[in-house]
Image (cartoon, rainbow, N blue to C red; front, side, top):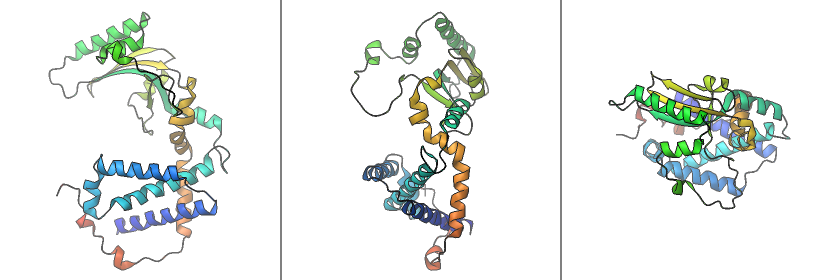
Length: 274
């Protein structure tokens, strides 16, 4: 019963998204739809979603419709909360959340959890040696290339004109709090560091080492205006939006075709391995 009711709820949500977009004259561009179809096909074929979904009666076309529903949901969300929206999130709130929930770092990582022969003490000493070199003014890129076995000639890439938004520094990594898509277990420690502070974190329980150089995430607008914008907006207004959609779905009048819905049996769900 739970699965059946959840399926009906998801269908109602899709109807609500479409209706809200129609009522507010919100349309998806051909490019958005094409990108959605490309994403669906990528996950279907390359990431193997077909092996799990198809045995359960979900076709690629149905999966494309699910992606399309997500696009309508996102479009209405932005209609409400993006700049100039009915409930626009202030730039200050976005900036404050950026700093509160995310951090920009240079980082070297060593996970030795699957290496039974690893010498944890030696690995930590190696990372501390890198830290000392950085503290003496050595360039992080040089150490990064050395650590990853990248030759200087391979590291040089021809710059070409491209309008696609991109970070100013390709070596920057973004780490985030536990409720973000870039969750980092040691985020609070990183967050507390001052700009350009260098720290070696040895997580002995997880058998992992991190060399961190804290950078200023606010110095590159790419993160606030592009890469993390949607994530930040949903952190701020996701719960409110979900509640709004729930209210809209409850207000919809509908009937269900019991012949169709009763064909779905939970016990027949396949995990794609049998």
